Image (tube, rainbow, N blue to C red; front, side, top):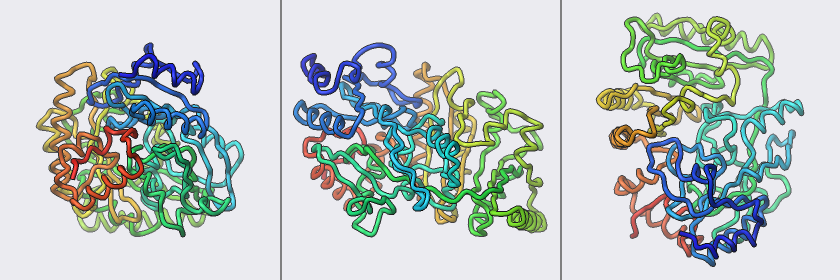
Length: 480
């Protein structure tokens, strides 16, 4: 634990208003949504500039204390919970949108900028550009999702969010500042290339290589005409086939799928274990847009033709249901009409717990992994809630198994962890790799990683962070 003298050093470096060491708000930094056991936090600091971050890093090296960066703590992998007695670097006060470059289609943001904030800014300024939104709450960090290589509602077209980074500024574990991408030699943050791609040293490394203080986030043209719709299918394999096909056709902006329990959870059924006879098994949701009404109509006609071909082959699915019509019938679906949105049925329920096994993997094996995952969840008496989608034109896909639970119930937390372990094992056996990889997954499955990969990661960390202060609980790979 940090000594009183060490805590005072941080106050002297920053200010009293930038240091937190007690209280209800302070205690919340020791846990997250998941089944991960709470840990005792040593101190929370609130930098307000890159210079503040540099000072914090240099002082941590001198004191030998660990640093864990965080913005809202909504990660569901235990990544933002520091080691016992460690210092949390809460970046939410660094929340400036530094540049909006409409011509080169990017924004330059600090780590505290949220999806809600950026959306409101673009709308108020009438910028005709759009971004992809994750299903995380609106008050979460744009930078955090990109650095963890998460996903958004345009990831089917443009890939995981790490691909959307046009370069960044970071404070290294030694306190030095680096710029990557084009910004290393240009005043326009237009791309990660053509220089050597040092941006990758900060994507999916979970804060172990430094603290990112600025990032260029790519935007895309916003077509003026758009429809969001749902298609009900009665067999999840039909939905998986449709996702694979639609990701290749090119007339959809987004395609994803939700298992039947998600629909029931939306209507306050906390743990639906049985599907009603005749109830759809999977919901496809689609976004289709066009630069003109005629283009949108043509794309919708192509979708109708495809659905007709599926039916002709003997597969059962309903006609597309426009979300506007659906909201008029069932107002609770309005939360899907605009992103970012808060899925309160997942995170605001009485038990407060949310966990998942989220993976990237081959879409050719969706059916096999879903079948195994549903069997595992049913055996543990958990609702088999699946969320899946194609990524980057169908080159790979997302398979997630979601579960809500009572965080206060230690026995239930243990069941969730055991279930997640089985889901991860089943995924690895089929070639699916957890993204936003929780530390417990790395510890238990390190032998599945290529030895050269492990050794290179270790050498990079030792080079950049010789004192081992940056998020030491993340990526706990075995020593060579």
